Length: 91
Image 1: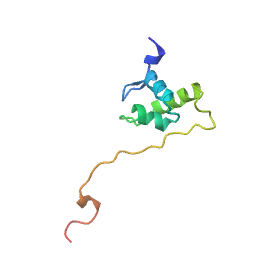
Image 2: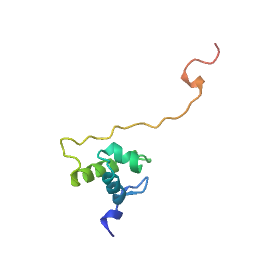
Image 3: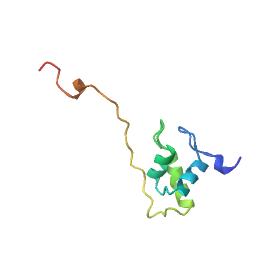
Image 4: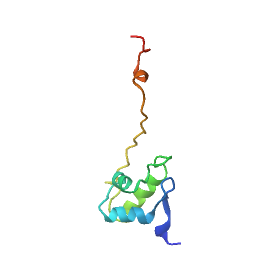
Protein backbone atom coordinates (compact mmCIF):
# COMPACT_ATOMS: atom_id res chain seq x y z
CA UNK A 1 0.00 0.00 0.00
CA UNK A 2 1.32 3.41 -1.01
CA UNK A 3 1.44 5.93 1.86
CA UNK A 4 -0.58 8.31 -0.34
CA UNK A 5 -3.53 5.90 0.05
CA UNK A 6 -3.56 6.21 3.84
CA UNK A 7 -6.85 7.59 5.16
CA UNK A 8 -6.31 10.83 7.00
CA UNK A 9 -9.99 11.49 7.68
CA UNK A 10 -12.01 8.32 8.09
CA UNK A 11 -15.30 10.17 8.45
CA UNK A 12 -15.02 11.83 5.02
CA UNK A 13 -12.66 9.25 3.43
CA UNK A 14 -9.94 11.80 2.70
CA UNK A 15 -6.55 10.27 1.85
CA UNK A 16 -3.04 11.61 2.28
CA UNK A 17 -2.99 12.10 -1.51
CA UNK A 18 -6.07 14.34 -1.23
CA UNK A 19 -4.37 16.46 1.44
CA UNK A 20 -1.14 16.68 -0.58
CA UNK A 21 -3.13 17.72 -3.66
CA UNK A 22 -4.83 20.49 -1.65
CA UNK A 23 -1.45 21.69 -0.41
CA UNK A 24 -0.10 21.73 -3.97
CA UNK A 25 -3.11 23.85 -4.97
CA UNK A 26 -2.27 26.47 -2.33
CA UNK A 27 -3.92 25.29 0.88
CA UNK A 28 -1.41 26.11 3.60
CA UNK A 29 -3.51 25.93 6.78
CA UNK A 30 -5.62 23.27 8.46
CA UNK A 31 -8.72 25.37 7.73
CA UNK A 32 -7.98 25.72 4.03
CA UNK A 33 -7.22 21.98 3.68
CA UNK A 34 -10.49 21.31 5.49
CA UNK A 35 -12.45 23.49 3.05
CA UNK A 36 -10.76 21.92 0.02
CA UNK A 37 -11.08 18.27 1.08
CA UNK A 38 -13.87 18.11 3.73
CA UNK A 39 -11.38 16.52 6.15
CA UNK A 40 -12.57 17.34 9.66
CA UNK A 41 -16.19 17.92 8.66
CA UNK A 42 -17.41 14.44 9.56
CA UNK A 43 -18.95 13.02 12.69
CA UNK A 44 -15.83 13.39 14.87
CA UNK A 45 -15.30 17.04 13.77
CA UNK A 46 -11.55 16.56 13.17
CA UNK A 47 -10.54 15.11 16.52
CA UNK A 48 -8.02 12.83 14.77
CA UNK A 49 -7.46 14.20 11.30
CA UNK A 50 -6.71 17.78 12.32
CA UNK A 51 -3.52 16.63 14.03
CA UNK A 52 -2.62 14.48 11.03
CA UNK A 53 -3.12 17.41 8.67
CA UNK A 54 -0.91 19.55 10.93
CA UNK A 55 1.80 16.89 10.73
CA UNK A 56 1.57 16.79 6.93
CA UNK A 57 1.78 20.60 6.71
CA UNK A 58 4.91 20.47 8.87
CA UNK A 59 6.51 17.57 6.99
CA UNK A 60 5.88 19.27 3.62
CA UNK A 61 7.56 22.45 4.88
CA UNK A 62 4.41 24.52 4.37
CA UNK A 63 4.18 25.47 8.04
CA UNK A 64 6.63 25.66 10.93
CA UNK A 65 5.80 24.87 14.56
CA UNK A 66 5.80 28.63 15.23
CA UNK A 67 3.30 29.46 12.47
CA UNK A 68 1.04 26.42 12.74
CA UNK A 69 -2.45 27.24 13.99
CA UNK A 70 -5.14 24.83 15.07
CA UNK A 71 -8.44 24.93 13.25
CA UNK A 72 -11.16 26.75 15.18
CA UNK A 73 -14.04 24.40 15.97
CA UNK A 74 -17.37 25.38 14.50
CA UNK A 75 -20.33 23.62 15.91
CA UNK A 76 -23.07 22.47 13.55
CA UNK A 77 -26.18 24.58 13.49
CA UNK A 78 -29.70 23.27 13.45
CA UNK A 79 -32.68 25.22 12.14
CA UNK A 80 -35.34 25.94 14.72
CA UNK A 81 -38.75 27.53 14.77
CA UNK A 82 -39.36 31.04 16.05
CA UNK A 83 -41.14 29.60 19.10
CA UNK A 84 -37.87 28.02 20.24
CA UNK A 85 -36.29 31.46 20.66
CA UNK A 86 -38.24 32.36 23.75
CA UNK A 87 -41.61 33.05 25.17
CA UNK A 88 -44.46 30.67 25.46
CA UNK A 89 -46.26 31.77 22.28
CA UNK A 90 -49.16 33.33 24.21
CA UNK A 91 -48.42 37.02 23.60
